[in-house]
Length: 360
Image 1: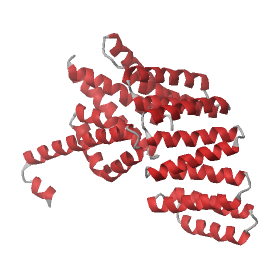
Image 2: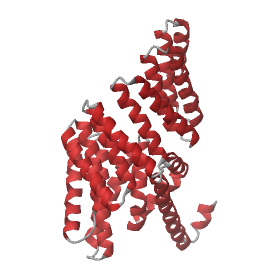
Image 3: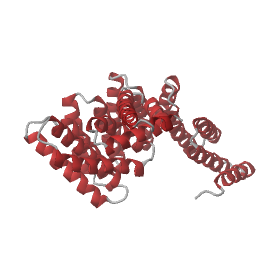
């Protein structure tokens, strides 16, 4: 009814759409601030709740070349899609921004808007490169190279584009880690860390430390990984960033397990789970409970492993994350099978099959 009423007065339609877009794009920036402050689960939950309005606001901003609105929303939405397995949505979002900005830059003069457009263009290209990597690594590099060119041009002209450069280097670090280019990944991530320290970009400092630990893990150097995760934990605690503190404890558990320090790994996991409960971060709780379940299974503590996996099932069902619940149910069935409790295992596997009927 509201839309029908507005359509009777076109000027009201335009004004309402403009206000709607400005409100929700600004809201994404505010949610991003919540994420940066260490409450990523709250930020992701709020974006999920508002996602239909946010998409509408974004599309209107793109169609009407509202650069300020797009700039407010691009990082928050890109991080949201990166953290919620929305690779195709993240790619579409940033490709739309790249296309709009390519056109807009040809039509604007060398003023403040032009400078903002170029900084935004560098970010959109970097994110497009990151999301495209999942489908076409060669095309991904084309986006990333163009982002680097724009950043270099901005900095040569006296524009402080260290924020954009840190973001680009972070995404290059992730992509090169996935490619197995660990020395290159470490080079970019160290550069990201230094730039982020210079600019006071706390969230990126934490992300770089986390990624340096991941590079150590992926390259088969758990001792080096532990070194970086310890720095990650210390930095998260210094910034009172609880989400990253929980994440760092989980990562330290993974690294110490690979070092065969099983009691130490269990202690890190338990600290992370306790903190996740205290700060109502159920998603991080499920990640850490799953790792603790696998540690218990490895050590032959089958009853304990089953309890941890069942806790993951319960929390995931409450959160409405069926795939995570299903995975934990499979782990539960496998643990019963390892325990020679074949009837219980078969019952659980039948339950899994019933839940997956008709699904790809």
